[in-house]
Amino acid sequence: MLRLALALICLALPLKAEEVVLGLSSDKVRITATFEGSDILVFGAVKRQTPIPQEPLDVVVAISGPSKPLTVRRKERKLGIWVNTDAVEIDRAPSFYAVATTGPLDEVLTSVEDLRHKISIPRAIRSVGAPGNVEDAQNFTDALIRIRKANNAYQMLEGAVALDEQTLFRTAIELPANLTEGDYRTRILLTRQGRVISEFETVIDVRKVGLERWLFTLSREQPMLYGLMSLAIAIAAGWGASAAFRVLRRN
Amino acid sequence: MQIYLPIAEVSVNAFLILGLGGLVGILSGMFGVGGGFLMTPLLFFIGIPPAVAVATEANQIVASSFSGVLAHLRRKTVDLRMGTVLLIGGLIGAALGVVVFNYLKALGQVDLLVKLCYVVFLGVIGGMMFLESLRAIRNTRTGKPPKRKKHNWVQGLPFKMRFRTSGLYISVIPPILVGVAVGILAAIMGVGGGFIMVPAMIYILGMPTKVVVGTSLFQIIFVTAFTTMLHATTNYTVDVALAVLLLVGGVVGAQIGTQIGTRMKAEQLRILLALMVLAVCLKLALDLLIQPAELYSIGTAAGH
Image (tube, rainbow over the protein chains, first blue to last red):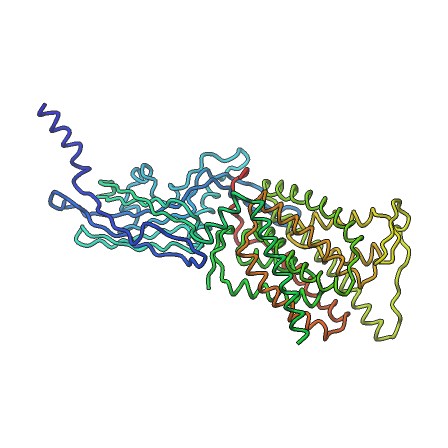
């Protein structure tokens, strides 16, 4: 009995020794008509029962937007013009992904732990297989990351997490204006010598609200009505312009 | 001021869109075209997804042509009968066009087709118009009266019908075919097709120029309204927020454009329009011919 209890404590100890207490500047992002992007401040403290171990602590923060399957296409010159030829289907790619760490990712996280927790950008994308005619599927995934990094949808923020006294950490992650709605999964990992010692997860809720919400819902649920409304607006504007024109000319 | 577009899911500068709408509105008021052939490439350029740009542009053209047709109705320069015949062809064409558009979207070739259509049509029409207006300017200088061809192959076809406003007694087949062709283009390219319809009505159908613009606008309203509905119900790609911004700019611009247009000669206007059309054509052609900086592009998965 005593041996069993000891074994249990030994198993539980490395998990419970250090825990994350998290704060977020906001756990909701509201996309209004004038949405210009948003800064999310992720901060927290490490709660521990034991003295601080010798090895330095590292913190990894990863925010990932809703995943969708997509197709990456490549252009090739055919008959003198550039056309899309090869295509690779990516099974899941987050619409937004940001990783912030206290140091270089390969020092903070071993590749085995990266594989298990899917932290680095290439790991966050899942591509099962390319069609037989495409041999260099990796190039397509690389291109996806390159394009999304260029418009700030994927961010690799090495060294962006500030850690004080191995206890208090904080980082700011910028959500761009071109944001899709959904649940943004936010993970905080505590690591020592590349190994994950504690993991914490929460969700930032990104939603269209007000007019944006209403228009989007209408366009999906009542497409006929939405189409008619668009036409009514167009006809009214056309008539209004014509009427205003006549008044202006008469004066 | 940034505006988040609910359907396109991108954030754009409202003043930029208003400005674009205004600029294209000025040109549309000056030359009597819908301006879709200019607006759609501009929307691509500022990062609106092509499918949304094409569908939303159709909605905007409904507004500008409705506004134009009201003015023409007051001047009695709309051939309603001819318009209806063109319309029947146009609706068939628009339905075919949306089917083609969706098929190509699944193949990933929709961008290519839209661009090729643009290059070919802008090139041909811009070139023809440029030569024609150059000849007209030279003729007015030398004082030669303009020639008008009276009879062509169109006169020999069956199912003849009388079009009183146009003063024509011709077969219904050519107007229906013209309608189908313009309808397909309207659906695929997100344009009203005025820049194709107008020359076709003058040169193929032999309609008098003064009723051409009004009649063309009349049928464009219905074709683009139909296209808007099809895109809204099958692709969910009509962005009403974007459409409203474009409309407001376009309506104001069209008024300024009409004022400028009345102070210029017809040949000068036509040659300016031809040069503009050719410039857009050249830009798009270069995009196809020069190696792009990024060879890869991201699209939605097939079947979505």
